[in-house]
Length: 391
Image 1: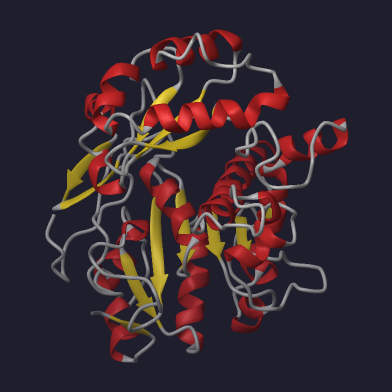
Image 2: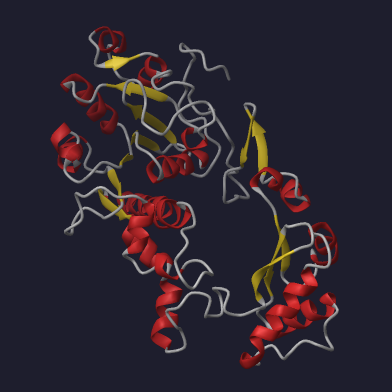
């Protein structure tokens, strides 16, 4: 579909299980857009309300977090634009916003204002610290949020300092994923009760929940709060990363005894390898594995290991993932509107999700068409008066 400004927008065309669900997204960065991408992937009609000129650190035809929904530009400092948001809310099932606590209320579309127009609305709020607490109104980013949950402390295999995993654990693991879970749960409840509610999705809450297994390990008395000292953090040589002769790496996750036995057999070190749980010989085992993996290239080890029960896989860069045989067979990555990108997930047997609109080249490129499709009156007047902007 062309990104022409005057293109036609039709609602209810999604094929996924959320077809017919209508979502108003107040544009933000990171986890909010990712959550709305997921909802759109699953078939919801999402309308993205951008600020005129777009959002800092987001936008453009390659910003996949903005795929699947039209972009309208509204000047939310204009009361008429805020009234338009409330008109959209009146016909929606969900609103998603990621502003600091109190900002949406001051602008005029907080939960109370929205529920006056639509009592069954699910109001999703995406923040780092949450809506309450001493840090609620402070600035922050992914690593700050995961830092105070105890999660960042244990990440990485360097005993001298933690290493942060870009923004996967906080923004997307503890953030957008939990926001979507909350929205879907609240939608189910609203169908039964006829009443909406606020979903307070905080990255600190979600990350703590995501890390529940570590909490269990800690309270079991068998866990030590030192990096690279436990079963799953690199403390065990059979759950670690090893370099190959060509400077690449292999991931080894042979936890169970039968998988460990297959690892040792295929490495050809059965006669020299210590027993799997000889803890006092872990250093010896690690050196043996490291020296062995350094004897061949990654491609040679992949040919030997992949498809076996040794739980070993080559670590490949993002640019190569689309060409991995398994990823190709499942079509995990596809080319859509000239951009290679992940398919919607998960998969459904009866209502498969499909990709729709590409990311908007400019904020507000669909303003006229999308507002009209949502039934907003006098769209041209809104544009003429500056409350809305057609890019």
